[in-house]
Image 1 (cartoon, rainbow, N blue to C red):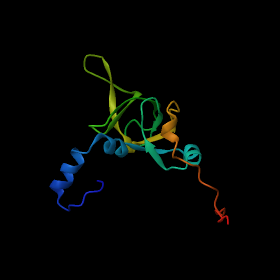
Image 2: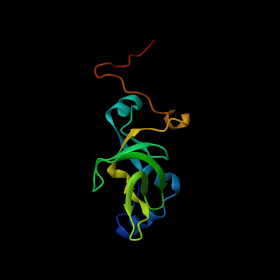
Image 3: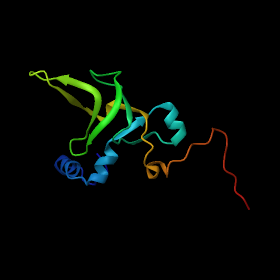
Image 4: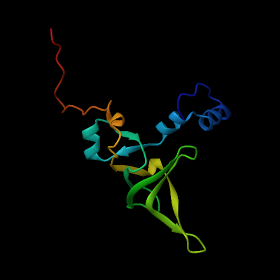
Length: 131
């Protein structure tokens, strides 16, 4: 659950539910597809609104769409094409856990989001010391 020092379940739960929002955002990280993984040099990044994602687990598996909202307090993501009908016929979005998603298209409007990410070098290539 994070950097909890206590081994008591009660304290671990308290830490998890009272995390600050920046820690909750890190908990909503989504795995990247192969192309993005090589391009960004990261395995996962926090999901944001307007990212393109694909559902890889659950009853809505295989559905792709754009993220319309991210609920940090509930730890869920809402996708535009993942819907269900209510009894009165109205369609509502279904919350999806971020661990069940794969990021296929990242929203590039914020340059700071990818500033620290650097592409990995091919295997066998090492940095040499310059003297």
